[in-house]
Length: 113
Image 1 (cartoon, rainbow, N blue to C red):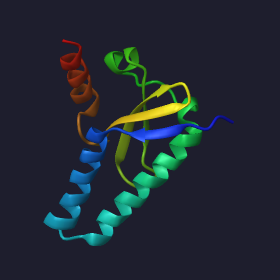
Image 2 (image 1 turned 135 degrees about the vertical axis):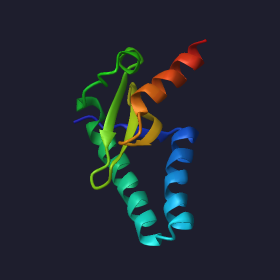
Image 3 (image 1 turned 90 degrees about the vertical axis):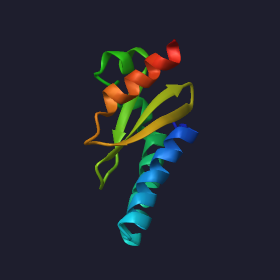
Image 4 (image 1 turned 30 degrees about the vertical axis):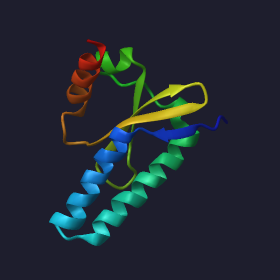
């Protein structure tokens, strides 16, 4: 079984931080914030061993750029990642109710310009 080094991009870390901050400082739910953080860490650990076995995203633009997704185990968040050799780059973290595929695809298109 392959093992991957997981790198969280600053943007993805900022997204995760904003979700956690909202729970902690707006909703004043310290436990929920901690649970999301723990689930994110567990998902990163899982990604280090399963990244290569997960399917590419169905969205054509994300697929073209080699993106996969992985859902958090206990919460409705997910990570968009790409694989380069033995390294996994998590480039974005979204809540599953967001239009994350089109949002991230638009960001990729803007970066290609």
